[in-house]
Image (cartoon, helix red, strand yellow):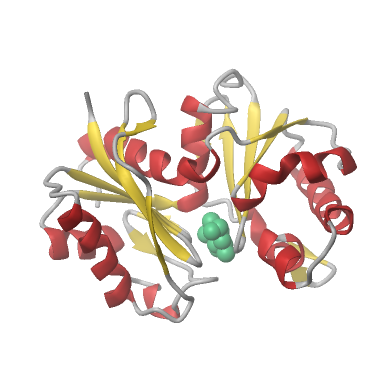
Length: 252
Ligand code: BGC
């Protein structure tokens, strides 16, 4: 069995568990620590270290992080502390824990998990877009099973505003929108995504996916529209799987 500690850093919480990366299942209970946008990198690193200590973990770590991540380094910081920009997350976690760490964009991690173990597993020959609707909007594009990373489709501008500031699940909650009202905003966003990429399949993940029955009936898209199957575990499982897949490449 291949075991990896998967950690999903989000805009409002850090979730983690030990993952069986061959089966895509959790080996320990999912734990969550709340965080806020203003939390400094040191606090986030401390929480990651807490996971390691609590689980007595001495293996590999995979981290999903809500930013453009290249070679372990954060290049953006939309819903997290701006101090992250330029930091090598994987290296910092290694310094703190002494454990080999690999870092990937959080939506790319969730997408990877859905493609391997969830809703996308039968669509490896297609163009698949996974959109995570949560604090922000994350995206992952798979072209016949290959990830095109860091696509940031939550930052497409719609009516002069970032899509994630108009149509994320956080916006729905903050504005207390009814599902039908929120679906109108989402429809406009999905139209844009379809216009640009003509995907065969769109998978909706993130916090909103567990309620898909409440808003899917109001949406009309050309692609096959599917709810994510791994729900709030996709980010953890995908981060762990990413570490497993990347370890041989010696990349931070
Ligand atoms: C970030 C993305 C992230 C998404 C979901 C956006 O604000 O720019 O990198 O994937 O939120 O967390």
